[in-house]
Structures are given as structure tokens and as C-alpha cells.
Amino acid sequence: MSWLEQTIRRYEHMRWAQEPNRRTLPFAWGLEHIGGDAKETDPRGFLDRFVADTIPNSDAWYAATPANDYELHDNILTFTSALESPWPENNRVHGQFFPARHTGPAVVVLAQWNARWEEQTDVCRWLNRLGITALKMSLPYHDRRAIPGHPRGDHLVGPNIGLTMQANRQAVLDARRCLRWLEQRGYDHLGILGTSIGSSIAFITMCHEPALRAGAFLHVATYCGDVVANGLTTMNVWESLRTKVSPEELKRYWSPISPFPYLSKLHGTAKKILAITASYDPTFWPEFTNAFLDAAHADGMQFENLSLPCGHYSLGVAPFKWAAGYRFGTFFFESLA
Image (cartoon, rainbow, N blue to C red; front, side, top):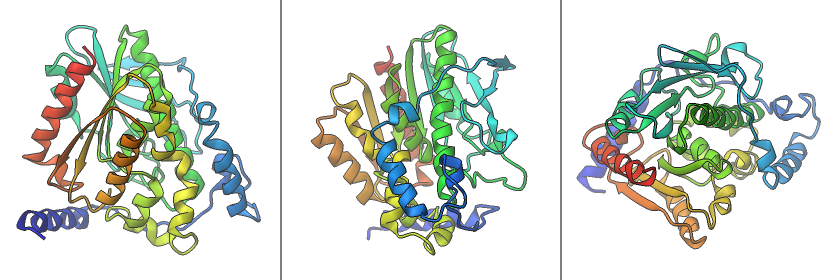
């Protein structure tokens, strides 16, 4: 292990240890959140059938109509989510709008798990400097969508299997409603940028959204279950899950909310793709990243990849954030021209 890798890994563990309010929530099948019965006697059988039906019919599962109540005040966009969760606070979507001087290209920005309201505003301002409008959407159960007693985004990625699936689906539907609003404002050269879980959601959105021309994905992996069962930042989630499901089961159950099953949807499209990955990532393991990139190559997808010698948290600090910002900035400037 090189000096740089040792330094990066120490930094990653330090950042992970400093995160506040981390809890280990109880396991739940949560089938009632995906059309099942909370008292289902065979939850594994239900989930196997659900996955087998949902992935081939994902266009319908991820379909979303425009909202009928968009409101913009002081560059804060709000509207009703396309999916109703059990908590009203989560069902009102909030987005921060960063308009460029002229109507032209626009990018929806999806931040990382547990991101605060003020995070990634520098990303949006950087895009503005390049003449690109940005709309940063709050993820379900985050910041202004947080629910009582849960300051973290516990329900977007948590040990409740069905609720996690519902929340990730909700995020995709909400992102598509953001795109419909941008179209209503006259933006027709549209892109999407996601980080960590935001990258997964952004990729699924791109696979199902014809209006998107380009996508930049900071951290990529095959399956959500792989990340949660092995990653540093999701150890508290896996602690509860591991008592009830195996890594292979979790990978299969959460495959409808994972990027890998939808790779073929981009085959033959003209969409531009940029993957920015981290060589020493203890959450999105390089094994999963490389498997994703290898499969994309094998499928004939045309994409660009920037690999940086950093980790998950450290991608967001200098000098790595400068390299990533320069690359995705020029990528969108060229792809959405």
C-alpha cells in the first residue's frame, strides 16, 4: 500500500467516524411500501416475484407525469412528489435553482447520502460560470424533506428493504418532475449530475428519461446491495440487514433500484456519459466500479472515465474536487452545447 493510499484511507475513516447522528435502525421487510402486505408470510417469495416483474417493466415503474403545483420563490422550487410516502414532510420536493444569465443548457444536481441543504452549491455556481443553469434537488428524507426524529437520510438507504426501494424510486420520479419543470421554462439541452447515491439515482433517471442528453456520475457501482453490504459508510445499515438477509439476497432484492440492470437501455443512444471514480474508495469498492465499467465497455457504450487517486469523502476535497469539477464542467459545456 502506497503512502498516498494509506493517507487517503486514514482520511476516509476519520471522516466516517466524525459523522453525527448515525444510528442502527431495526430491520424490516417493508413490503407495504412496494404494493405488498406488511404481514406477508413469505417475504422472500414476494420480493423474488416483485424483482422479476419490475425490472422488465421498469419504464412503467419509473414513469412520472409533471407536477401541477410547481412554485418558485427566491429561487427555491417546490412541488408535490410523484410518489406519496407515509410522511407529508417528505412528499414536498424542494430544489435550489441557480439560473444562468441566459436560457440554454440545464443540469439537475443530485447530492450524496446525508447531504445538507447547503452542500454542492459550489457545484451549481461553477456550472453557472460556464453558462449552465443548475437545479439542485433535495433527495427524499433529506434536509427540508427530513422527517421528525430522523435528521439523517435514514429512509433513503436503510435496513427497511421495501421503504428503501420506495424512496429510491421516489427520487427518480422527483428528478423527472424537475426535468419537466425545466422544459416548461424553456430549457431543452438537459443533463444530470449525481454523487454517490445521487449517482445511482441519476444513472437510473438517465436510463429512463429520453430528454436527458448527458450525465456525469461521481462514484459508480453495479448494485446498491453490493455497496451497502460492503461499504464503510453503510456499516450501520448492514448491521441490521445482515441478521435477516445474505449479501446475495440484498443484491437481488434491491436490483430494481440499482444501475446495473438498466445498462442496456443506453445501448445505441447518443447520450453522453462521464464516470468519475476513486481508486481508494472504501464505500463504492473499485471491484464494483470496475465491474460496471467493464460491462459498459462490453455493451459497446461510449463513455468517458476519469479515475482519481482518492476515496469516497476525499473526492470532495482539494485537489481532487478541482480535477473532478474541471472535468464535469467541460464535459457538460461540450455535451450540452
